[in-house]
View 1 (cartoon, rainbow, N blue to C red):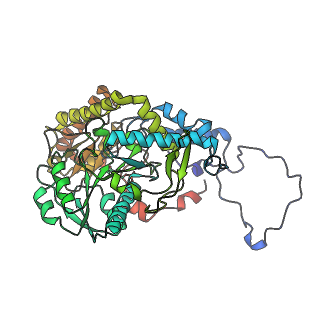
View 2: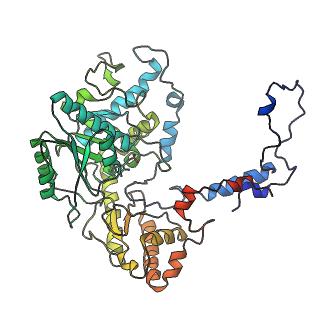
View 3: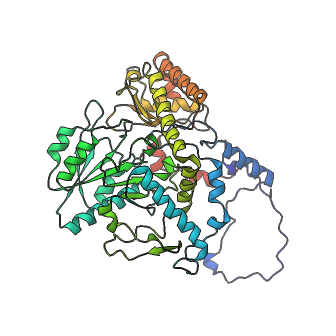
Length: 485
Ligand SMILES: *Cc1c(COP(=O)(O)O)cnc(C)c1O
C-alpha cells in the first residue's frame, strides 16, 4: 500500500473548474502568498476513490473481525443504536435552545432520557443517585475523587491518602493524584486477590478512600468486599468502585449492596457505543445518599406536572465538570440498549461474557501459563513465560495473531503478571469465532517453540511489519508527504 502522493501524475485532475469570472482579489499581502503550488497529489476522481476505499478495507474493527482487547470490552455495538442516536429529534438538538419550562419543550425528551438512564443505572448498580456528566471512565474517577474530597472537607476530615491495589488500571492512581491525594499501593496476593492484611496495615485516619475494581483487572472477583467496606468505613474512608468491568456482573452483583459509596460506569464498555481510538465515551458516576449533595451541577428535577427542569441550586456541589449533561449521544445509546436488553437480556450479557472468557481460559491453559487457572470473570489472563524460554515474548504472540486475522489482546497489563496476555472475548462472539481464535493461539504456541524466529518476524500480512514503536512516535517522518512522483 503506497501513499497517495506516489500515485500522483502532474496535470491529472479529479475535477474541472470553470475559469474564474469574478475579479481576483489581490488583497492577500505579498508576503503571505504562496511562491509555488502546494504539493498536493494530482489524481483522477476514480484513483482517489480507489485509494481511500482500499485504505478503509485495511481498517481493523469489530465490524471486520474478533477484537479481544482485555479490559477494553470491545463488544459489538448493535447498528440499531446508531439509528437511534441519529434520530433528528435528538441529533439536531442544541442545548442552548430557547428556554421554556427551564429547558425547551424540544429538549424535554432528551432530558427525560438522561433522567430515566440515571434511574436505570441506580437500579443496576444499587446506588442512590447518578450523574451522567463525566465524559469517560477516567473522568468519572476524577469526579468521584472530587466528590470524596468535598465530602471529607464538609465533615472537617483531614485525609491525605488513597489506597489502590497494584493491579489497578493506571487511571486510578492518576485520578486520585489529580484530586490531590497521595497514593498508597496495596499488593496483590499470589491468588490474584487484594492482600487484606497489608490493606489493614496501610489503612488509617489519613485514608480518604480505597479504590477497587471488582472483578479486578486480573478478571477475578473478590468476595471479601464487605469486609473491606467495613474496614474502610471504620475510618470514614470512602469505598470507590471502578465499574469499567460492569459487563461481568450485570444482574449478579450490585456495588451499592456491597456498601460501595461511589462508582463510575463505563457506558462505552457495557451498554453499546463503539469505542477505541480515544472515544467518545461516558463515565456516569453513582453515589450513595450521603454523597449526593456534592454531585456536579446541573442535576435533573422532575416537576409535579411531569416536565423536567435543570436544577443548579446545590450549594455543596463540586460544580461543573462538563458542559450540559455529558456525552448525550452515548447516554442515549446506553438508555436504548438497556431497554432493548431488558432485565433478563442484561443477565444473559454477563453470563455469556463470563462463559466465553472461561472457555478461552480452559482451552488455552495447557499451551500458555495461566497464573490464575481456575475460574475467571469476563476476561482471562495468560502469560507467555513458557514461550519466553524460546525467546518469544507476549508482544511476538500478539503480532503473530494479526496474521491469523485477529486483533491482538491486551499485553503487559496488568503489570504484576510477567509477559501478560489479557483476553476479553465479550458476550457478542459465537463459539465458532472463539474456536478459530483458540486454534490460532495453539498454532502460535507450537510455532513459538518450533520456529521462534518466524514468530518474531510477524506480522507478514500487513502493509508494514514490525515498527520501532518508540522511534515511530518520537521521530515522526513527515518527509514522505512531500515526496513527488
Ligand atoms: C477502561 C478502564 C478505565 C478507564 O476508562 P476510560 O473510559 O478509558 O477513561 C478505568 N478502569 C478500568 C478497569 C478500565 O478497564
